[in-house]
Length: 350
Image (cartoon, rainbow, N blue to C red; front, side, top):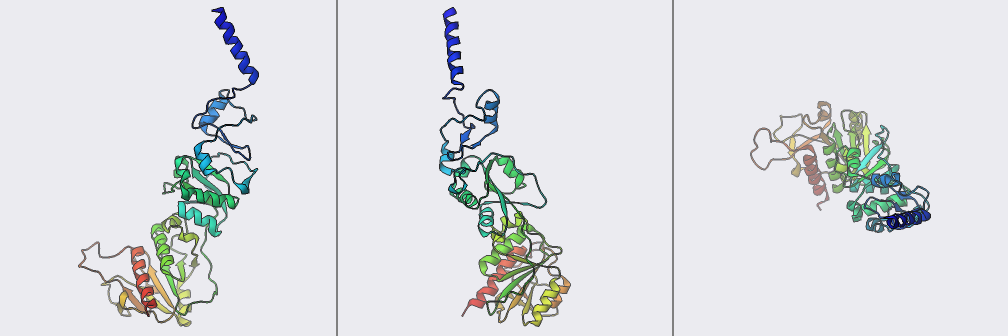
């Protein structure tokens, strides 16, 4: 028994003489050091090991990097050498900042430069190895935007439950552009004028269709309208980060001014709507012959009476069957896509 005790004491003395076991085991949540900067990422599990007498903060031992960090190398960027990357808590909600979420919105927010990007948050784990996520991280490093790993729960909280696809970007908000005097390059431009679109999902889908189909400008009323939020950006698949939306305090004044400049004002109504002051034409029969404003009303009520009276032509989408009550109309974003395709396709036809 005394021999065993002496052996045990000698082993303790040997370990203490080294200060720390050179081959201390690492679990999947342990500390990983940045190859270039000697900074480290810590999880709650590694902090627990350290608090129990494990690694001290000032010790610099080389450990095997995980396969995840070898593939992604978020912390090892040539443009960021010497800058430490730390695991941090997600930001507190701030009224003057946006949390952009989703692959396309985050990537376009970084590359287009219309926002000031502050921090990129990436879901820790296998999702961070996807090529799309790696590309976003590379763009962030290229622009000097810190990249931080957080949990899925943190990302869910940042995006308020939205589909974040493993990435969130803290950035300054986007605002409506102010009216300007930019000359029209096309001989027959088409402006899309939104009168009271309030659902962010509808606004995002409308922006996506407008960009895809070649609308020259999107204008929106500032009153009774949805602001340019991260939800709109996600619904637009990031188009909101590319295509500026012009805001007007008074759409009527803008429309009236365009009429004096020779523009044609086209309004939209549901098929079978009550008789108006001008005839209603199926959208497939309308041909753009001059610069045109296409007016789209909000969900439910449609165009306001004041905007309706400014219209020189009204168009509708004919139904393909007899419709039952309650399903006799289209969603506003779907209707807008059909109308834009009809008008722009007819214009481009020789």
